[in-house]
Length: 290
Image (cartoon, rainbow, N blue to C red; front, side, top):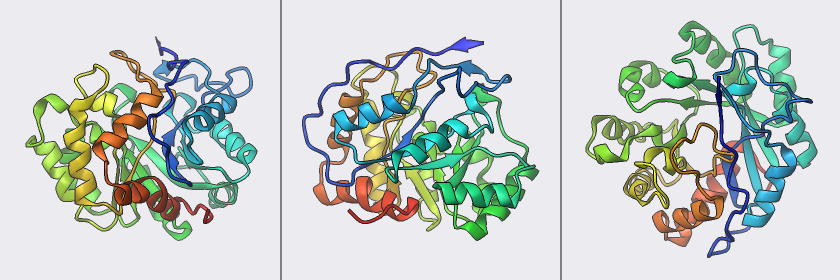
């Protein structure tokens, strides 16, 4: 079983201040494993990255809010994420992983606790596509809650599952710019399909994970053309996040302060940054007005 590297313990102070209400729309909490055990069938083991570490990072970077996304290493045991949301007293929202056996009562309880969506992994190294009957069934059930679905895809999956994505009736969020490969350029079919997908009013995308899109060396500037194109395509349906603590990075561990500076380089218009960091996540995740 693969063990993950820890995040950079010394994030730089960003060169520019973030706006009030800025949201990290993609981050994780892991463990601590002696309190919230990792899933026995996990494909990787992360270093513990508990709530306290996330709060410390956000305070240092000037981030007001966050969305804690359940990761596959905890499976459908959402307790670490739910505990962090509860302790945050409104600062954080969550995205859960559930299976086909989840009850309506459990979904309603998570809604009351601050969960606003579910996530499905299609990524090959995390086990590949889910049971698509379960996928369809869960999406039908979350519709009444006003939730969305987060799709963690490999680039080719955007084409492979195009028909199924087109049938989705709830808002859906594509993680990490669809894990496009920068070396293939902006004309690659997967990215052109993703840009076309953004014409769907239900489609959202996270312009984060630059270290996953990039050929893999800081400061990951080769991801900039992709992020800019997605922001231009759907300025009211883009989100940004750190992806702290960066699980499964095997090339060059990002520095979270540098990732904030990178975001300023690919979104250099203050009005667009306000939408990316404040307005859009507040609308999707139901944060209170600042």
